Image: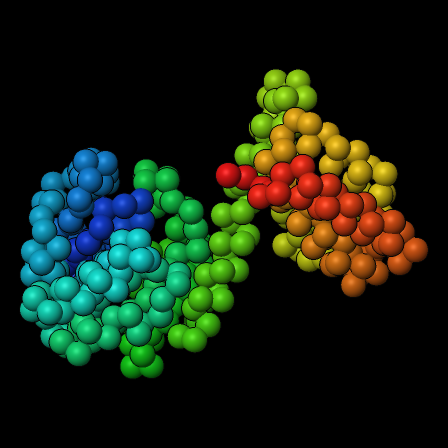
Length: 311
């Protein structure tokens, strides 16, 4: 008697990937581990093709139309700006098959962007993993417990959530109209965090710290944990304390050693001050001097560099 996963679960799907970036092959591998069968992948660049060969060995690299021809479940994992044109082109050329599950992973879009394919009979799903990807095997492991922003027609909601759970993720329902706000929130937290950490490491190296990553690791880990647990109550540092003199010294040093960071520092400091003041952490009598320093810093920065910020 055949006791393979496919025999035990005969409803497993043939999976195709259009766009072998960092996300698609990892999701296909995760689905493969639950018994689904990756059958085709498309990639344009040499890097994409190499990634597909590494993450999905023995899966043929073909054209997007051929991926749709071979697959029951198609992952459209292309950049956000390319997605509408891709969907329109696939629908117009007759590549979309009725009853085919068409899944995109864009955080920005809901299922509306898939309307051309839906009119051709496709079943549209928007499943966005709220995680950064490396394009390596580690991504598959990180999917365990990862939240997915899920948007789907009501009749497909259970199917969408089931796919997320099979990949090890946690489904979080996002209304179609809220997708852009949802994506902006994630970009604000994750993408800007990378920039801030990279800038911090560069400044520490300039200050003579040999291993800035070792210094920042425990500090940032604790800060992130505190922020997730306590929100604004976790605010610390000279801005939240109202140490105007320290902030002025920071601005002066940044202007000398890393002028490209001044605009970001001032903007984040002002936002931090506003939140600390609103939540009673920053004393009103100290806020005036602090905000004055930030205003002077911004004015001085504009005078020093009229275009301001990084170029």
